[in-house]
Amino acid sequence: MIIEFDKAYLSELYYTGHASDKKHRFQPQIVRKYVKIVDIMESVSRIEDLFRYNSLRYEALSGDKTGTESVAINDQYRLEFSSRKEGGDVVVTICRLLELSKHYR
Image (tube, rainbow, N blue to C red; front, top):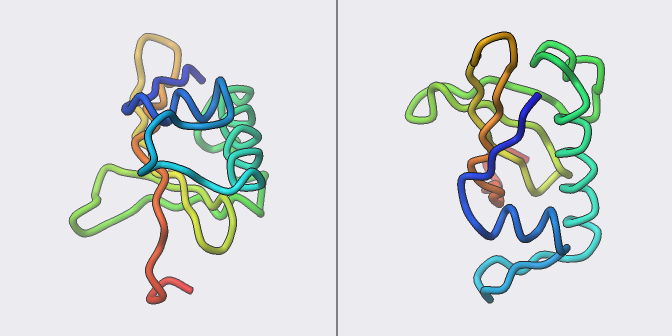
């Protein structure tokens, strides 16, 4: 898959391990897991290949987030993204890394 970053801080987290702005500071273990998951996503050729990784807990979101998919970083954080076909490649756009509310725990 081809990875595109929707926000600059997501690219910074992936390439440098930290974000330059104070709003998007995460614990080092979260950043390491984020990088690992983006690497996994980059290595697979289609979305269905993510199903092999049970720990990712892949899901297509519904409601006001229809068209968005997510995988788990840990119990507290999920990585939301959207995907589309472009030629023969699947292009994944990383949308955001967010904290889930207690509703989802």
